[in-house]
Image (cartoon, rainbow, N blue to C red; front, side, top):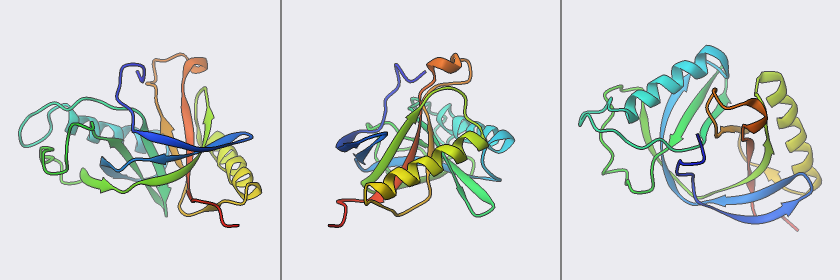
Length: 176
């Protein structure tokens, strides 16, 4: 899936053992609230945003799919988002028919990135989140938000070929 899809623009700021730090350019996201991380909540969130980009908007216009799909928890629920193609501005995107699909301008952000392949599930993501938090602390970086799961490939991709990442927003540059 991700081979042909537009991905968010970033600059690699630093490489550490086990992870790197990237600065993502400002972007626009279509975002939905989900009942929680993973499972049926993820499927429902994906369908709502996919509905928007496949014509579920007031212009009936299709918008190109991008990668990755991002998910993160917040309290008892969570969020899912797609980055919109760079050819759009917030004002040029068609208005969603589903009032739960939010279009948001996202500022530049700095994130620690831990890549992994294979399937993802709550236990695996929790273990990887813990590992990335430890690596970030060892490097003297300060997390500033909850970790995000970034999924680049669809469910039909063979597990060993899947590209996923844990993104942990951090304060950059590190304090001396």
